[in-house]
Image 1 (tube, rainbow, N blue to C red):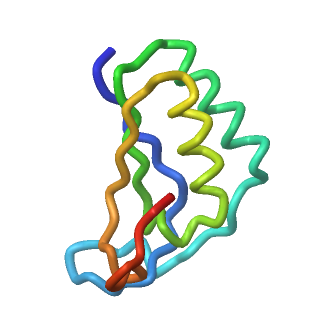
Image 2: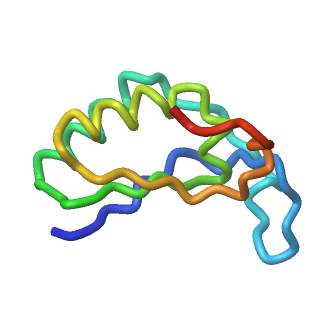
Length: 92
């Protein structure tokens, strides 16, 4: 398996016309749920995991999930609108 898209949630800090996920934001699930699902995904041995949303960078536990995937040697990427990143800021 090459790539798995891992959708975190529908919350977003943008109001894009082509996307309506921000109209009905939903609450987060417990971190343990995301970890369990990610473990199941990683057991399939994908080469890469791409976190998406909504806006993944506003998901507080994103760094923990990125670390979990990276610890398994999986390439990690994040699809983001980048609004919360400014000069000198980066994702850990």
